[in-house]
Each structure stands twice: as structure tokens, then as C-alpha cells.
Amino acid sequence: MDAKTAIENGKTALGIEFGSTRIKAVLIGDDHAPIASGSHDWENSYINGIWTYSLEEIRAGLQDAYANLAKDVKAKYGITLTTVGALGFSAMMHGYMVFDENDRLLVPFRTWRNNNAAPAAEKLTELFNYHIPARWSIAHLYQAILNGEEHVPAIRFQTTLEGYIHWMLTGRKVLGVGEASGMFPVDMNTRQYDRTMVEKFDALIADKGYSWKLLDILPEILVAGDNAGTLTEAGALLLDPTGNLKPGIPVCPPEGDAGTGMVATNSVKRRTGNVSAGTSIFGMIVLEKELNKVHPEIDLVTTPVGDLVAMVHCNNCTSDINAWVNVFGEFAKVLGVNISKAKLYDDLYFKSEEGDKDCGGVVAFNFFSGEHIVEVDEGRPMVVRTTESKFNLANLMRSHLYSTMATLKIGLDILLKEEGVRLDSITGHGGLFKTERVGQSYLAAAINAPVTVMKTAGEGGAWGMALLAEYMLRKEEGETLEAYLGNKVFANQQGTTLAPDPADVDGFNAFIENYKKALPVERLAVTAMKQ
Image (cartoon, rainbow, N blue to C red; front, side):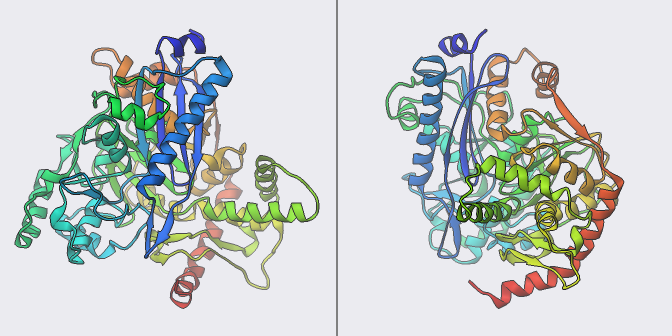
């Protein structure tokens, strides 16, 4: 079926994902491939010590991304988009959104980027004997309780960003299991919130006398393939104020960007993994069994069907290298040279390959925000070198690219070396891999394992979300998500696999040693340059 016919007949699926700097909408046809897209650029704000987005920005961004998708459909196929076969929403995971009995947001949205819930996370980790990261929703909730924040007694519903979008458009207070596992630990046997830990939390706060218990305020958990409601009339108008979009479209469970990354890279079966690299970077490996012990560097979440996943999540990836590329772009304009942003990235990335394997002693820290894995509380982007370092453009760019995955390497080394986790394949996706070969080869060196990048790598989570919507709509009786992706979506997908170059592996290891030695300087910058 050609794309125009698929659109006219509703044989499509739409995924919309709220990333940290871009909201992207991807429409796919019946061959699973993207046929139209739209996006909206945005940035979080740092207000009163909190990284946040306003509800107005969220809604306006949603509408603009959809409007740009509809324009793309009109331009390519000459038709007005009025319906899709299925729909799904995704977003950056975790964070804190709480509402009262009148559905009013009680405090500004606190994103995953905030590290202010670390004391609560430590207490809950000890209570549960289960690692609770500071960005998880339950940590934010308990930190608000510890702080004595006056809004807490009024909470009637807590959710995440995509849970909020889904609720606004369908009226359903639900989450996909993968995203829910980043709110509160999930029992991999029941695919529901861990009952024992829920009881421990309720007992912990019993003396506060709140009118609610934890399960009263958390979203219902659904798994991939479940029907999570339909687009309401109000929801259709919120998404498309022109009124062209019709209500009644089935909507799949909302998922986090970790889950959509697993789907977009066909990494939902055991002993497979993926690395998603954008504003943040995280590596996911689907486990065969539980880990031997609790590691503060390792988060345990689930796939969109509820299988256990070890996750190394790092807050910082491409923000600092983007800033440097912008500076080089400004410099080019000063010289009267007009270079497209895409060519600028490609040229600088390729230039890095001429650098020394260990970056010539140049060390870059890409911390726009804190990084728990290396115990850095706030962001202080920085380049450090000695007078003997080989400071040139190639080594500078190589050090910036290495820095995008340095903390990820530290975390993954725990899984692969200490825990002995077995890994058959790992796939990279996201903006870092758009330039051919460069980011892929550096990641292979960082983890000392082959890395595959598919042609769809740049589509990222919005495409993965569209696939989840399509799976709900078109799966056969008893067909698992793993089988659907393996047999139907990725059976003929083209990709390239790069094995690690031993010299690159040695060079990356040498860089990491320098990186670790310089970490006290980075931490000192946090205390010495208080914002």
C-alpha cells in the first residue's frame, strides 16, 4: 500500500515523543517505515533551582509538532490528515507531576534533570534494598514529604510527562509498564508495582496522616499491546485545534524514552541492549536474571512488556558538544563562510578521527547538569589539559565525543565486568549516531563490543512509539512484541555493525583514566562557582 492510500484508509500509526530539546511526531505506513514527520524545538527552564517546562509550553509544543506533521502530510501527499490508525505518546522518563482533586497542577513540573531528591533516594534505597535513583518519581514524592512541602496532603494523582499527555487526550490515568518502573519499582512477575515495597512506603509515611495511600495516586499499569483508551473529542481538539483530526482513535499505553529506544532498536529480548544518545545518554541491557547486588550506578526498569532491564542512565550527552559546534558555526560566519549545521557536525566529527586515540591528554567534561554516577551535583562544562597535552582541533573534538559516553562506560563496566552480564548485541540510536561511523566506533571502543546502527537510528523514540501503537493495532493473537519486531519490522532492516578497534579501546581506557583523575577538579568547580 502506498503512503497516500495508507493515510486515507487510516492504515497508519503515529508516535509523538517529548525529548528534552525536541518534540517529534512520526507517522508510519503499513510497511512500518516513516512516511511523514513534524517537530517542535523547546528548552527546559531553570526556575527557583528547578529544571522545568510549563504546562503551556507542553501543550503548545504538542500542537506545533502535530501541526508540522499535518503540514508535511499535506505537502507530500496533497491530503488533509483527519485520522490515523493508532496513536501513542512518549517522553523523557521520571520526574514529578502531581495534581489535586480538581486536576490542578500543584507545583511546577520537576523533570528528570533535577537531582534535589538525592536524600530521599538514599533513604528509599536502604528501605527497599533496591536502588532508587534521585530522578525517579517516588524519590521526588518522598523528598517533598521530607521537605514538609504544603502541597503533599492535597495530592490525588501523580504521573509523568507522557502520562499527563495521555490523560489529557484520553481521560485515562495509565502508564506503560516500562515508564511505570521508573516511577516506582515493578515486580517482574506480576508486571505491577511491587506490593511489598508499596506496603513499606505506606508504613514509612503513615504518621503523616495523609488521606491517600501510594496506590491511590499512582497511574494504572498496562503492558505493550493493551488498549489504553481512545482519543476524546476534547483530546482531538487539544492535539489539533483546527478540528480536522477526528476523535475515536485507539491509543496505546504511554511509554518512556527508554522503552521506545528498546523498540526502535529491536532490543526487547534477553541479552540484547541499546544505547540511546541525545541530550542524555543511557544504555539498556535486557537481563536473564536479577543482579547479584544493589549498585547505585545501575537502575532496574523493564521493557514495554515487563521484562527486567539494567539501565545505566547519564544526565549529560550532547548538550555541550552542541554548544561547541555552535561556537564553531559563529566563527565560520565571522570569516564569511556559510556552512550548514549538518555539514558542520559531520566535518567536526570526522576531524576527531585524526586525533590521538587517548585525545592527547585533553579531557572534556560535558556536564550541563549533575551526574550521579561520578558524584557531581551540578553542571559545570569544562575542558582540562596540561601544558604537555596535544591541544588541537582533532583532539578537542575527540575528547568532547568521548565525554558524551564516558560516564556511560563507567556504569556499563560494572554490568559487563563485575556482574558478568552476557550481551549478544547492542544497537545505538539517537542524534549522536547521525554522522556515519564516528559515534558508533567510539561507543564500540568504550564498551569493547560490536555496535550496530540501523538506517532508522536517527528516527529515535518517536518511531519506536509509533511501532508500539502499530503493535497494539495489528498484532495477531498471542504474538509477542519480540516476535512482532523481529519477524515483521526488522526482518529486512539494513544496518551496519562495527567491531571495536583494539587501539581505540586502549585509547578510550587511557582517556577514562585521565578523566577519573580530573574528576576532583570538576567537583571543585561545582563548589567554587556556585550558581
